[in-house]
Amino acid sequence: MQQNELFGKCPYVTSQKVLSGKWSLYILHLLQDGPVRFNELQRRMPESMTHTTLSRQLKTLVNDGLVLRRVHSEIPPNVEYELSDVGMKFKNVLSALETWGNEYIAYLSQDEK
Image 1 (cartoon, rainbow, N blue to C red):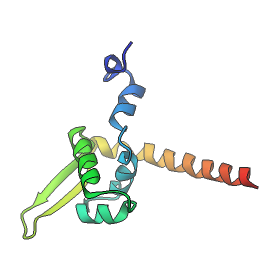
Image 2: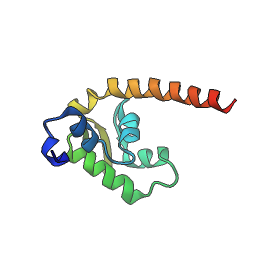
Image 3: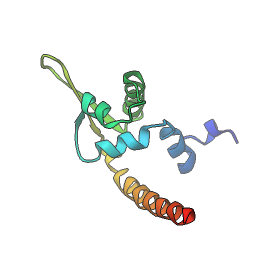
């Protein structure tokens, strides 16, 4: 069975496809505490992240329904991003990934000794 045939049917393939962006997990992590302006998000990203790459990744997350984009009519225009309702349900997964990531970092540190 092709991966495309499993999208929307298999939870693992669906999750992998939606979260396949290089920075998607980190962006979701940055948004889990509430709305963040685009420029603030860019400041929190690694220096190698370009404006275009962040913009593209956010657009994908918005299109996938995980993130909401809010434009405030001000001068200059203010754009904020925040987790959608379905994106908020991902917070438990982020917490579990953080726990596992920290345990794995500890494991790697032991391996170096």
